[in-house]
Amino acid sequence: MEMQAKMGKLTARERIIALLDKNSFHEYDLFVEHSAKDFGMESKVLHGDGVIIGTGTIKSKPVCIFAQDFTVAGGSLGLMHARKITKIMDHALKMRVPLIGINDSGGARIQEGVNSLAGYGEIFFRNTLASGVIPQISVILGPCAGGAVYSPALTDFVFVVENISKMFITGPSVIKSVLGEEISMEELGGARVHSEITGNAHFFAKTELECFEQIKTLISYIPRSNAKKALAYPPKPPLKGKKIEDIVPVDARIPYDMRDIIRTITDGSEFLEVMELFAPNIIIGFGRMDGETVGFVANQPMVLAGVLDCDSSDKAARFIRYCDAFNIPIVTLEDLPGYLPGVDQEHAGVIRHGAKILYAYSEATVAKVTVILRKAYGGGYIAMNSRHLRADFVFAWPTAEIAVMGPEGAANIVFRKEIAEAENPEEMRQQKIQEYKEKFANPYVAAAQGYIDEVIEPRDTRSRILHALQVSENKSVFLPSKKHGIPPF
Amino acid sequence: MSEEKEMKELIIQGAVYQTTFTRKFEERIKWEAPNINMLYSFIPGTIIDIFVKPKQKVKEGETLLLLEAMKMQNQLRMPFDGEIVKIHVKKDETIPNNYLIMEIKPKK
Image (cartoon, rainbow over all chains, first blue to last red; front, side, top):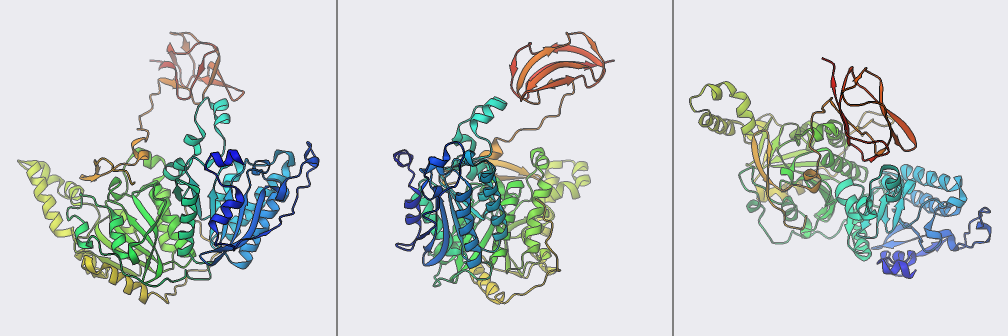
């Protein structure tokens, strides 16, 4: 226990108490013990078999929770340990309340052999059944290695803490002996790696207590189950800060921080960003508008010019599906030059990754509102919740440019001959870019087709979105009956 | 993203955008066309035997050397009829992945 404390780790019980409302925790199966008989296990007593399960509340909302106890046999997972977890999972699904799992385990209990593997399988199966029915949250507060990583991977949100969380399929020692590559645990599967590089984690914190605050905030934004709407909070206006019309430079090549725009739209300028460090060229997260939870998907011109690529498509697509499953309307803020060019992107499968975002938006039946701020070029325009994927409302600022590509690229293609034959090709090129800009770099061509419902002033953005959401309150659409679709993975 | 990042230029379809790069983008591996005359290791391991010498003529499919990795003896074979130009490894040498083992050239 002292070792745990030295690493900045709380004990399993301290964690539950810190996370749940005061005096709300009720523990079950405290007297469960393992029944293993081999390798000297028969003489060992493992209290509660290394995991604590129970129910409680967070901000007065009920939750089911389990926490693995690293101080009991390294939190290793044996048959009874797994049975306790699956019991609370079944309970969460039956009662339609969120499930929170705190993972801190050395892995399978080898002495229990195939029974521990069976235990993992039973957990994965329940994670899958519960997916899209109740919110499932995984908190990685210690090692989570080998097969154990797949339970968090099947859940909705994974929380990690710097220097404490470690997740990998094969650890550094195996990698070294087989492949000769030397790497530390932190570099291989630490909190930062999973938040920034792999995309396995959704929330990054510096301490366990900061992590618990993040969980409490998240719980406040999401509904208890897919049969409910998220609880509404008292409405409040955005804080008086930067004016929305002053944030976006007119020149489409100059960046700004899209989060500043979101903060001018949300109640109290509050925004809970999800996966902040992974693929930051797209922003996803929750805010409230008139007290109701809204999911935001927005291009970030500040990073990689806001392009769509493999990672940002994965990130946005999964979030869209989350919002759709849990009755959270989606607001899309668009300003992107298209897809990221590059051999690495093509070879990494940007076609199938990019397709996910099309699939997710098309399939989503919650209210879908899009605001085009500046650039909306090519495939990116279609992907970002366009009318064609059944956006309910599409608004555009007067600075919006909806076109197959930007003026620079388009002029080079459309006027290739004129530019090549001109006495001064560069001068001709600039002239043709200007010509194209005047003709197509505006929202009115798309508006004339009805692809955009209205050209709005930037300062009216919040009120127009609010109205659109209000009108969409009773939205009801019917998709063709099917067992399930086959989304690109 | 809280740290201030240096502004970089990203060119997309002729337009130059001011923006920042991610660590993942900057560390991406630049693609190079493979050179069929260079034989690289596809896995780290130990060279346990070499069957050819420089300037030796070799037929397609002939085994050039044995690379032991993960307890498996992998045969490295000649991809086409040709000649050995240079051998960059020695017997019993342990090599990493993607290491230049041998230069070869096709028959004229």
